[in-house]
Image (tube, rainbow, N blue to C red; front, side, top):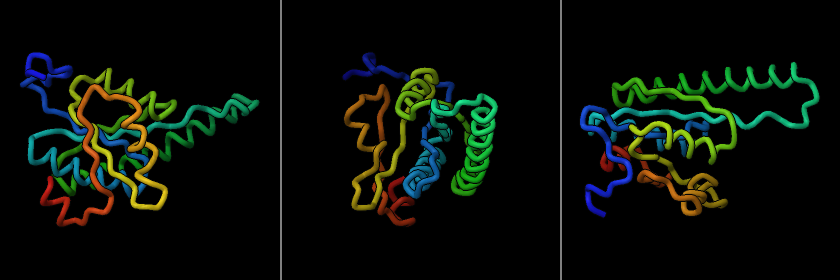
Length: 164
């Protein structure tokens, strides 16, 4: 692919964004650490995306559904702010925080399509016997219009520092 055929050119005046799905797993924290250091070393920005699951269709009462949605959003905001502090400690960068609602894969794709400054999706693989994790596994099934970096979940602090 030549440079003129690039599907997502990043404007020279914009800082490229490293997108991390912030789901509170140990893998997402490794991805955040790696993305933070890459952004620092390349004058980029980190975007943390939290996706709230769709509302429970079985809930009969709208008031209960709204309360559950508000609680989930409050929890996601708290997690994002905690992770934003980590990004800042790693890199000196204040990340962009985004909360979406819906199915994770759908919202991830929509967000990437909407924000043309997102240059790289950073994921970390799981370390358990269950495999790399559902998000990493789905990368091969659904194409992304941007590069995807999958960081091994077993990397040490020194390894992350060296690679980033």
